[in-house]
Image (cartoon, rainbow, N blue to C red; front, side):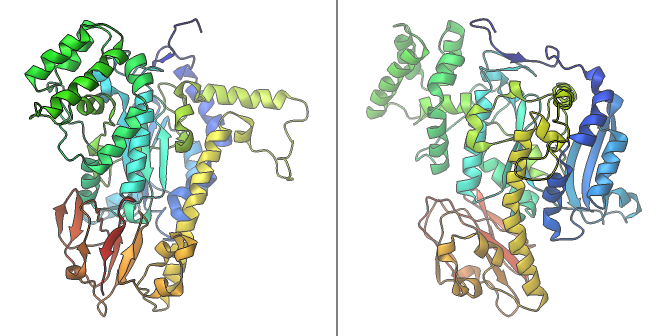
Length: 533
């Protein structure tokens, strides 16, 4: 690549040829698609026998033929059907009350979406008003950092603010990323709770006609402070160098329009006219804003520069995708039909090094299989240290992506084992007050029969999820629960009683005979709850 040239991706300029899909898909679905871990993920260890049976899949076939309400009895049936129809695209839906393929035989109103992972969809097109390099379906190395920032901010919030442990990030295959939150309690969330979480994570609001889309209040929320710290680390490289947001007169005017104080805008304009690059101007602005704030001259916006950073860098979620239980989302490891790229999992711990331009296409993978076979003695070579034959995906650049996925699925197995023990105990008439799943996921130093069989009078938690089981003989008393921190997040699942909004969380009013309650709190809280049964 010539010096100064920017890597760019469009549907047209990639080497992949969509006309080759009919010949390539049979090879991919037969030899490369990771059916084993894929089935383990969506069946969640078979804890609930009908869980996979009632899961909806949808297929998009050649010529955009769309087929919904597909469902399968097991992995074998799923494999055979996928290899038979060769879908150009696979979407995953909810777990329904009945098998989706039998939905026409179910009485009206009885076919209900019961569970689904909490999902997030972040698309680069939603950033078009703040991208100076690309627009529409195009992406390049100058704007891709927006997806890196989004993953870091959302993943931190899901982990630290809500305590969600099992999060799978997936490249969409073209211009965005998806997140699947797979904790058991999360899959059971109502639409109200899903909407509350999505709104909690939404800061940039307003349509195309609205100029200023971020308004921050004092004091700044701890989650927003954490997000700003993440964005600050990307200011120099992304905002000042890659996007050069103050580098031209038009870009400068665009940023200045975000400041509501007319007097401040004039001063900042004068600072910009002193010259320098975007970083130089920004540094002068920092000093000016600090001085104006000390003089109490910023009544309309206490954080004007923060708001610029949030508007240009903060994640932009499609709330409609997250709030619906029965919303379909593109499956990991399917092929994006317009780019040929595989929708591969992303290693969050190494997200800075994820490059969408090096994600393998289906044509590349098929070529790599052929090249491997042509090497003398390689075709039947066993895996190192074993007698097992090298699997086809291990012969290609898809290996790292499957390894990331296997690691995620392995992490889920801890949850499965805990749930199996819990179900076994409950089948014998045992009603543990302190949930076994939460007990197993807690630090080993805190585990004991005492914490397993009765709740503490005061629980100290740092983002760990504790489950409390109540029955008619031991009802959960909401009046005995008092919060001692304004940063508390409370999320309740499996409850049919009414909800009231409280600080972007939800607090229940209990009346159910048997309820699973999960209390989720940010790691910044020390004393969180006083619980009494």
